[in-house]
Structures are given as structure tokens and as C-alpha cells.
Amino acid sequence: MKTYSGVIKLGCIVFVAPLLIWTFTLKETFHLYKEKNKMRKENQAFTSHASQKQARPIQISPSKPILSNGKFLQIFADSLSGLEIEITDYTPELIDSEGESKLYLGKLVLSGRYVELVRMISIIEKSQLPIKIVSLGFDYDRKKRKPSSFITMNLLVEQIEY
Image (cartoon, rainbow, N blue to C red; front, side, top):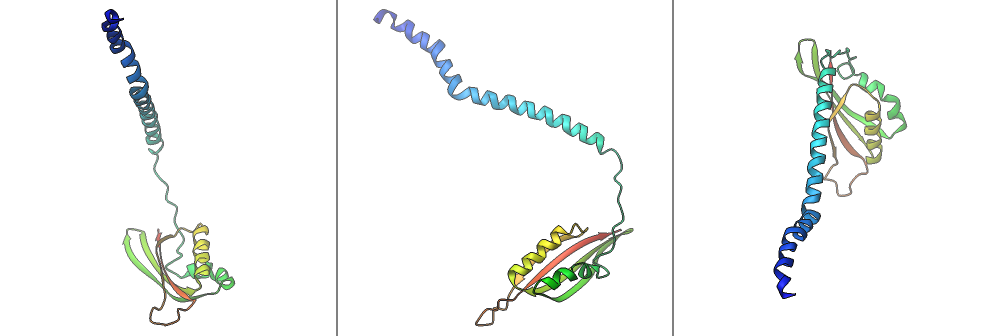
């Protein structure tokens, strides 16, 4: 056996070691490399196809004014009647204008119970109106010894009117 030990070691180095290295380390790396190249090709094909589709001009449909004229409150008036929510303040404000487009910000302050206010947010989000909720905050009077169950919600919504 001693006479063949050099040949056995050489065989292990030449055949067994590369096989073990491939199996335990390089096989998965090579597989991931092939997947990455495949995904890159698919992504390039998709982006070239998408860029060809977007070559058409985008049609902008005019939006109806909701924040500037107070229709925002009228739309949700019947939703408010079912909830124990009180409108404390509403202020529409023109933030920016460029050409025919105008950006309005509506500051709405509501007071009520937390769960009712969250339901109101859900109603606003599900309404599919051309408005975006920009900011939302809850407040309560920290000076009172016994905290009230009614809190205030400050809601900022924006709309672009063309």
C-alpha cells in the first residue's frame, strides 16, 4: 500500500478534491450566475418593450375640483353621520400653480374616537377620488388628568386640478 500512496494522493488531488469543491461551493454559485444572466436578459427585453409602449403621449384628463370648493366635505357628509366624528376645521389652500395645473392642500381636523377616525381614513382611501393623503396625525390634550376618549386627527390631503 505504501508504494501506491503517492498515486492515491495524486488521484485525490486531481479527481476527488475538484469534485468536492464543485459540489459544496461552486455548483450553487454557478447556478445563481446563470439565473442572474437569464433574468438580466428578460429584464432588458421587458424594458425595451415597455419603452416602446410608452412612446405614445400620455393623455391627462381634467380633474374635478374637490378640495378647493369644499366638495370634499360634502362627499363624506353621509359617512360622517354614521360615525361619531365632529369636523373641527377645514381649510383649503392653494400651494402651487403652473400653467393650468393647480395644487391644493386641504387641512382637515376631525375629533372623535380613535376607531371611528380610522374608519374615516379607510372610507377616504377606498373612495377612489383624485386626492392623496399627505400627512396624518393624532393628538389629545395632555394637560387633562383623566385622558378623554375623544382625540383629534389632523389630516392633510392634496389634489392637482387641471
